[in-house]
Length: 144
Image (cartoon, rainbow, N blue to C red):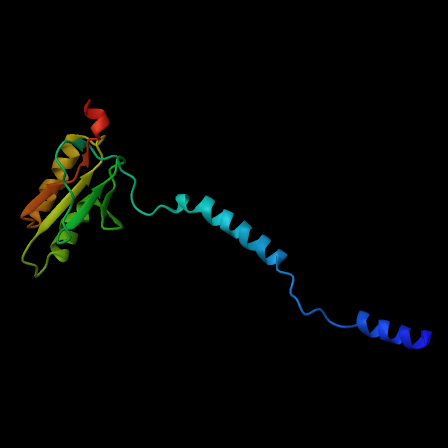
């Protein structure tokens, strides 16, 4: 009878487990979550500029083209950097066949006034009818 008991015990030891250990999966997922939480703010898309502040609110409408001028005098047409001397041709090409020729200008507040006027002049030479200047609103706390 003892021999029979041993054979039953051997069969139980050799059987496969029916439950999957999910602890390593949870550990990997938590590490990935932490990595994404840390890197997400670093993946900020857009162009970093410091817009001047004004009491009135001015936001670009969706029907115009937005030009962004950074503090280091780079001109961005949408997400593409363009040379100042090629800007007029690019604007003419963009507005070809369009009725409304509107440009919204986001210029860094540290830019010299002359550079901003030069870009506005280039836009006017390209046939742009209206140039709007985009600003940030003044916070209520700064007014007091």
